[in-house]
Structures are given as structure tokens and as C-alpha cells.
Image 1 (cartoon, rainbow, N blue to C red):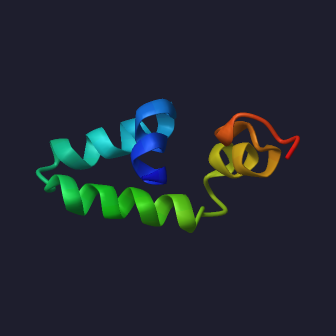
Image 2 (image 1 turned 135 degrees about the horizontal axis):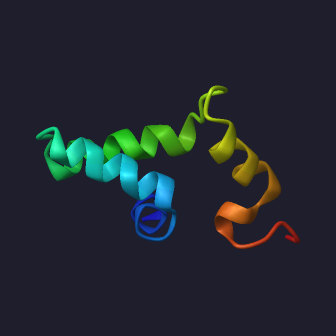
Length: 63
């Protein structure tokens, strides 16, 4: 469910899902790839890593 929400409300994740779907991947396969991207944020993906560390991906870091 978290991945589905991320693809709906986070532009970078949404574009990743759309790119996979345009390459012919089935929806489930594309969602699993997005899950992996969400769980294993690569060091080269600084924008997503920064959002996760600041808490802005989930709506604030005051938790």
C-alpha cells in the first residue's frame, strides 16, 4: 500500500512506474520494482534519499 501511495503522490516514483509500464512491464512487476526502489534507495538517487531523510516524502519530519 505504501508503494501505491508513493506512486500516486510522489512525482519521481510515478514517473518510474510509468516508464516501466511503457516498456511493457506488467503492473505487478512494475509495482515490485517501485517497492524495491522505495526500500533500497540507491546512493546515486540523491533527490529521493534527501526526501526520505528529511521526512518530506511522507509529509513532514516532526514525528
